[in-house]
Image (cartoon, rainbow, N blue to C red; front, side):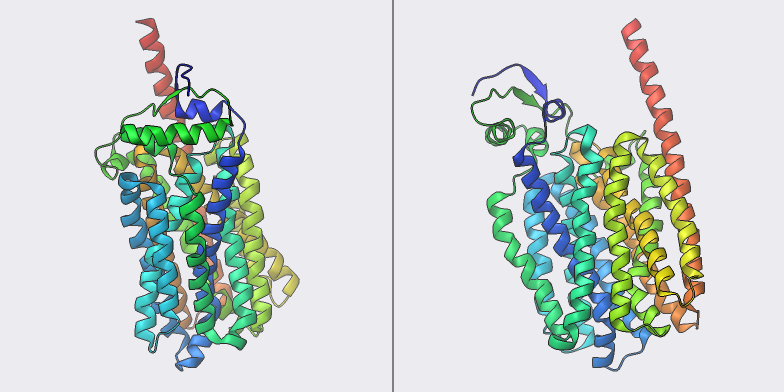
Length: 453
């Protein structure tokens, strides 16, 4: 293989069209997060069956929902830094194995306490898989198309969540909630051999390691990107590895952005998980049948999928923070419409679709934003810890649903309260836009001074 000068890896990826090899990475990560979404969403739909099986109150389901989300938070906190140390692919494989095996064991749970414990373990794996799939995809995408491609990949989660809801509603009466969990455990285990055989390690991560054996892997990957018989330049990382990927999140110039991203993720996932965890139960309490509830809730995931792709493309064309900020403002208006939809199934479906489009679509865009914000050496940690901050909101959202139901809140009141976190997320994003614009102008001044000197 001949050298044609040294080129930074980002310049190398940006200088050529997206190859079939890169599309395969995106497709594999799409399937991983789709199974993640299926497993995450199914628990909300089988909740009524679990409740009937053990004769539970609606509020008693809150620890079950909360355990899985708490596991997601802990998994993100642990597996993110691990991926910045040992690699994205290894952690992805471990994560998928963990949540697949734990879901299978969950299907055999003989008590609610065992099921809660196994949902926590399942959450650990789910929490590690999602941010690393986002990070790996991001690191194989050209800058000009990164937001669009990352959001397109992550739409696998919403597709999986929609299919999980539909599957659960249709099959729970036939195979029981145990059978639904067994399917959710078998699917990820079937994907693992394909991950081992076809999923590459991040070329950016390999370059940062500096090891000769890793550079040989970089050359092999680069040759597959450019195609057979074409010259591959000498590649470099273009940055130095951080001593601590966690400390780097709080470095000067990064800290405020980290806090604003965490605020956005917290508020966004609070809304997402209160709605997705409790929507079937809330609709059932309003007299909507389980099958109707599953179809209405699926409209949320359809909206999220379309919204994620549309917003991702807009993020590549315009300021991404501003695009997402206005998305959450629009979501607040649609939440109000959802609350006052009354008994109209059409109006409920349309408003739920719109909330999914702007809230979950905006959340998908948030993952792309976080992946672009951090350097390679702490990108997996940055995405995972932002996700973990969001998981705190998701746990709170799912627990709040149970608490408010127990206190006698009506569906309209619970939904209207979600306007507040949607607007807080919008404010955080508009503030992040100003922060990054200020930082950009300061950087330009420093560069101009350096040239003048």
